[in-house]
Amino acid sequence: MKFNGEELTFKRIFTFVFGLFVMSFGVAFSITSTLGTTPISSIAYALALITNLSVGMTTFIFNAGLILVQFLILQSRFEKKRLLQLINCIVFGYFTDVALYFVSFIPFDASVMMCIVYLALSIFLIALGIFIYMPSNIAPLPGEGCVEAIAIVTNWRFSSVKIGFDATVVTLALIMCGLWYTDIFGAVYIGTVISAFMIGFTLRQINNIYAHITGAHIDVVK
Image (cartoon, rainbow, N blue to C red; front, side, top):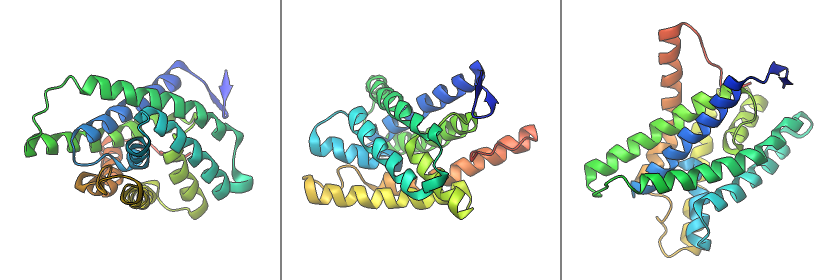
């Protein structure tokens, strides 16, 4: 079966779903760390705090909005396959709630060291998840889809655009909590700021290490 000019194999589907699953645990660890959620979920988490909806539900709402943003960026270059991101919204939202459930069973004493470990895990898992699922070339998550759209239009490096995009999302989440939540740092804290700059950097290092070991370069932008 052909999809997007390539054979739609079990391997492609598995790496796509597994990548989303890995990313969801990155989000769960960031929320549990109490240092602020990852940039990719900061606005969704802010919405959850403001509306009392589940993080999975607000993740779907926010990501659906990002599909519209991609259309505005790409215009005539917007491909129909990007509408499949609506399915991604549902899957990733569900995985996020599942990951939060399982992570809640891990003993967490809120010590400084434990918080730092959880933050480091979240950064690594988010970057690793992107590295795993993007090359499957099925359909990106709307967050990465927006980064990809900007990279396509500007011809900038995906990892560099990722840093700028994350920083923008963090700023908006901070403003939302400041206006409509009791604590301006409810969704955004020091860990979020660190993640905004470190996820793109970590993604680049994972790619470099993979290329060094295998001799193959994985291009996350199709």
